[in-house]
Image (cartoon, rainbow, N blue to C red; front, side):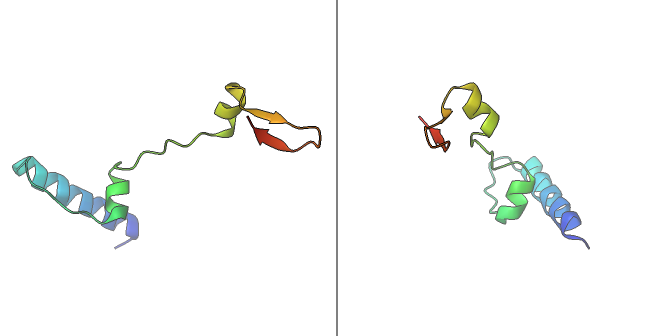
Length: 66
């Protein structure tokens, strides 16, 4: 079984258990939880920083955030 197949199988098993009992608390491996979308990335990307005007160059030509 590949790692991706393991993640899919574990996610399916957890989803089936929750479908049977929605109040059930299931502890998941962090990789399985990530596979299921539990962790959302909220970091800024370079385009957002430039767009918001937070990224500039100083006199030495170094990139800085203001």
